[in-house]
Each structure stands twice: as C-alpha cells, then as structure tokens.
Amino acid sequence: MKTSWLSYKLLLQLIGIIIFVVFILTIDVNSLVSAVTHLDLFIICTVVLFILVNLVIKGARWQYLVKRYSGIHISIGKATSSIVAGVAAGSLLPGRVEPAKPMLLKRVYGIPLNEGMSAMMVERIFDLLALIFLFAVSAALLFSQLTSSAITYISLVLLIAVLTAFMLAFLIFPMAYCRLALALVKRLPLKPVRKANLEIVVQGFFGSVKKVHSSRAITAIFLLSVAATLMEVVRLYFIFQSLGSETWFVLLTFALCAGVLAGIAALIPGGIGINEITESEIIDSFSNSASQSGNSSIAVLIDRLFAYYFLVLIGSIVLLFSRKIYAPISLPPNSEEKNRRVDSK
Image (cartoon, rainbow, N blue to C red; front, top):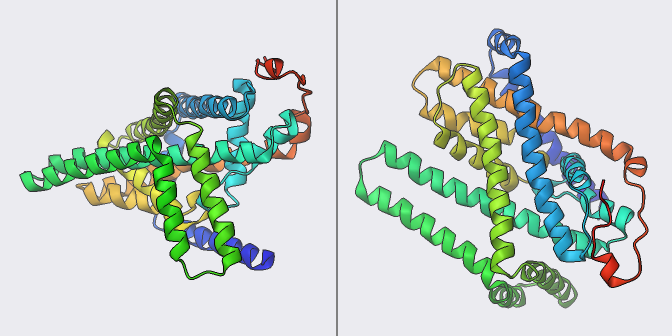
C-alpha cells in the first residue's frame, strides 16, 4: 500500500515537472533574458516585501487557529516560519496538504497531532473558500465588461450568490453537511470496515469545522484568507506592471485563482506546471497582441520562481534545521498558564 502511494506521488510529481518543462519551452529565451535583466533591486525588494506580507498574514491566521484549537499562543515569528516550512513539505504531497506544521506544533509545544491536523484542515478549507469566492467575483466582473448580455450578467451574479450561500451554510451549519455526507457514505458499495473508517474521517473533518462555529472566528479567518490571496494578486500585478504589461487586476485575480484551483484539482504537488500554464493561457486568451501573450508567460514564471520555488528552497532549509530552530518548550501543567502566551520571541 505504501509502495503504491509512493509510486502515485512520484508519478504526479513527474507529470508536473514535464508540464513545467513544456511551459518553459514555450517562452522565448531572448525575451526571458531581457525581462530578467530588467528586474532591478527595487523591483526584487518590492516583490520580496509582498511575499513577506503574504506570509505574515498566513502566519497570523495559523496563530489564530492554533490558539483556538489548543489554547496555546505561538509567536507570529514561529507561525510564519511554519508557513514557509509547510510550503516545502506541501510540495511533496497533492492537495496542498502541509503535514510539517502539525508535526512542528507537536515537537515544540507538545500539541497533539489531531489538534494540529484539525487546524491545518480548517486552514485548507478557508483557503479553498477564499479562492472560490474571489474566482466567482472576478469572473462576474470580468465577463460583465466583455458582454452586454443581461442574461449572462444575471447568471454570473446568481452563481456568486449560490456559491456564497453554500459557503456560509457550510461554515454555519457544518453538522448538517456532516449528516448528509454520512448518509452518502452508508450508500457506498464498500466493506463494513472501510465504511466505518470513512465515517470516522468524515466526523473528524466536520468536527474540526464545528470548532470555529462562531461568526467572529469565521469572519476573521475568512478575511485573512481573502487578504492573503489578494496579496498574491497584488504581487503578480506589480510584476506585470514592472515588465510593461498593462493587464487588468480583475483578470489577474481570475487567472491566479483558476491556476491554483486547477493545481488542486489535478492533485499535482505544488501545482507544478499546471499553475503556470493555466494562469498564462487564461491571460493570453484575453490579450490583444502576441507580445502581450509572451510577456504573460514570462511574468507568471517570474512570479512563481519568487513566490513558490524560492519559498520551497527556504522551507527545505528550515525543515533541515528544524530541530535547532524549533526547540521543544515545556508548558506549565496548569490549564490557565497553558492558555497564556508561551512564546514571546
């Protein structure tokens, strides 16, 4: 079983690498060299600043989730570095799963893996909800500018309304969805043992969502998730502007969300290749010139090199020295002391 899973994972990574190589081959080398030499210190520092802000936002969200699930306050520094380590670990598994973060919580703070996994699961849920929300909104705004059809516009507005209602209902009434999921599991043609195991997974999943069952928590986590995604769009928009490509912010939002969602759906770890091709193809489909099409691929590649592949390298270094960076912290046995801030660094 482990061998087949490892083979499947390696196959997905290989497919992603092949797609990425194909994407690279579509880029004109001279144009790429010209674009890279155009990146001065100001542009590089600004892009890095956008990445840092994005990481801090995600770190604040992780800090909030850990506090809510375990009662332990971790520093924003350790929360942010956990995000970087998670990016590296997530590049090895499909579906943007980041097992490094729960494991680091257990090593440093003694937080049980199930609590860390629950926090990570909810984090992934809100990432997905933010992507779907921004994808739907940007799609409505984008196509409303491209079509004068009232029917098309109304259909898009209704689509956003339905998706928003579905997301709100999922967050506010998670156990209703749990009962529906359990009813579906019972109808699956599986052996009783596997069916029972699947029911445990479903109950654990929706139980994790139920722990943030408050309007304040839902709003805070959702807004942080949307802000983190928008910061990625701002970074991509800045790169396009720096390369002299005039591209709609709404179009970049639509393309980036579509690229990430495509990467998740394809189950390719890190969305390697899929993200780049999806984003550039969507942007190219709305461009008016061949030069703009070439620039979009270059801009997307530069963005991914900075925001993903460079972070994977940094995250790998963090994981390599994690035993020194994340030394275990002894928590007081008293529950009140356990709930206070234990790491002020």
